[in-house]
Each structure stands twice: as C-alpha cells, then as structure tokens.
Image 1 (cartoon, one colour):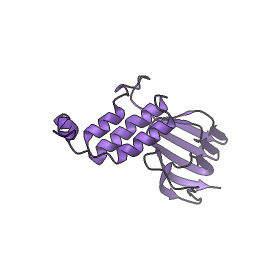
Image 2: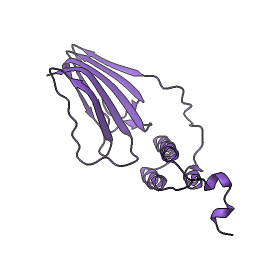
Image 3: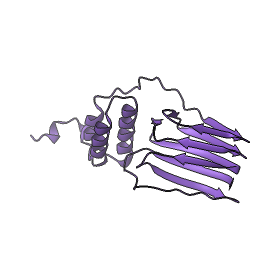
Image 4: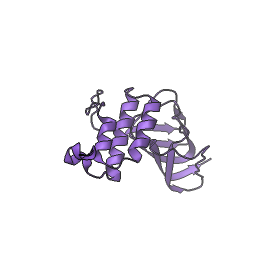
Length: 179
C-alpha cells in the first residue's frame, strides 16, 4: 500500500485554484497575527501554489487555529476625507479591507510600507476633486487601478514585479481632477 492510499479520501482529492487561494489567505492571516514569520509564510504560500491535493493544503495550515484569535466581525468600510486640507496615514496603522478616500481641494497621503495588512485584497475607492492622492505600497504588492482621470492624472510606478501570493491593492479612482 502506497503513502497516498493511506490518506482519507477527501485529502486525496485534487485541489482547485480557489482551494489554494483559501489556504494562502489563512496563511496570510496567520502571518498578520504573528503566528508565522514572514519566511514561514513565504515558504508555505509557495508550496500552496504548487499543491495538487486538498491533503497537501491541509498539512500547510494544520497548526493554525481555524478561528482567528482577534475575533473579527464583519468588515466595515473606513473613510478618509480631506476638504481644503491634508489627511494622511503613516507608520504602523491597520489597513482595512475596504477604504473610501475623498479629497476636495485637499491632499490625501497613504503610506502602507509599514502598515499591517491582514487581508489578501484591499480595495481603495478614491474620489479626488481639485486635489491629490498618493498611495505608497510595500515592494512586491500588486496594484490594479481602474476608473478615470478628468483634468488630472493617475499612474502606477513599480520598483519590481509583484510577488505571487502577496496581498494586492485595488484602487478605483473616480471623478479625479488633480493638480
């Protein structure tokens, strides 16, 4: 009898991309909670991307509690607004899963390099009128921008290519008119 046939039937089932994504999300949450080091997270998430069976994925998350210790409740959208002034988030702040940013004749500045990002995807909805918005993310984070710029500009500049299985940031900018 070979090693695979000793596993329970459900552990021998082929893993789908969605199963791999769920495992990586559990690993990312564990890293954000301090249960895994960044090195452990990187190694396990790479292994998860190449896992063939549900059993392989289960082994990667077997030592992680299924219920987060922080007792998360439903995600609430946070808002940042700058009207005729400046608003910024810097340092070690917790990035919510969904952030709405509005700037009217003002400047919004988000620095996420030292922020705590617990989720795999962060969505930032930005509306800027005659102002500006600047978002800095850690190297290796994938950024997807959508929306339009009217009497302004929007751009994304990467120092290096995004790293697979790292968090990503989706920024949807609307009605943008910048300096």
